Image (cartoon, rainbow, N blue to C red; front, top):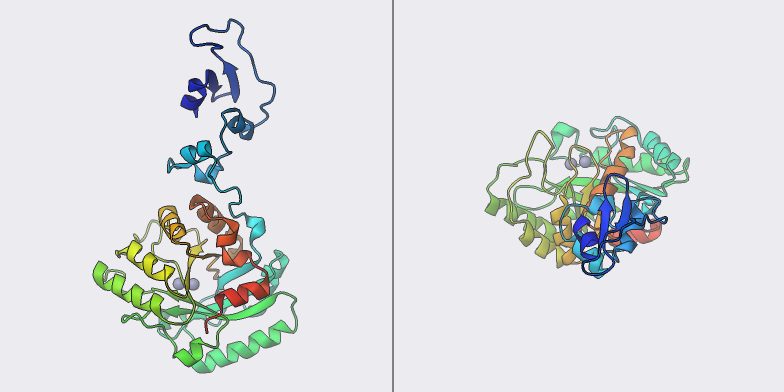
Length: 317
Ligand SMILES: [Zn+2]
Ligand SMILES: [Zn+2]
């Protein structure tokens, strides 16, 4: 921006947010420097340089300056206020700290219109994955809780992607959920070819599913696993699937560069919290920030929809 300003005969003072005219013609310097009275904050500088405002999350030298000059930056980047419902929440039925009702009341207090309960599937036995009898009990409890709260509760699952790419739970069960998140929880060291095949098979399953914490990284603990991400994105673009932007501060998956790749393919997203406690619902802001770094627009994020439209968009069967 400093360079753009000087090409226009202006000098952008980074310290004090001033723009000064340094030349009026090609060579003649202005003797008394003119201080612009219009600049109140940095957002005022962009139009003076004939650019769109560049939101802080976009400032990664990934083409945002060029886009702002061409005026092709999205004006409707998703915001925290756009999010209507919580996606991907665990309860005491699997490895969460709080009950269905506690999670529901916490999300309601935040002004959310819906909450998807997505405890683990049986293969994630170490995380208390729900076998069918407990799943039945959970659905009953969700129905009971729904009588007590205003927020709409949806019955979901975080289904493990199995080694052959199938999803956990038989199809007849998966079809009954309101929402299915499909996640890798083991075999992180599988070779890239095998992992790609596994994900492709998973994403090609006929039910609608959301690819949960896509590349499995845990910041400071585990790098993203190896796979051909672009191939998987190509498949998702042709399948009944969406991708999660995970707001857990240790995950923040997927990375902005992959979000941008997915956007090129017109793939839809959800911004999730992957909450294992009521307090973790507050991680939504990190998910939104990651989504914005990937240039996600409001209408590309399914949980900006009203409850009924959201349910229709993610309906598995
Ligand atoms: Zn998970
Ligand atoms: Zn989870």
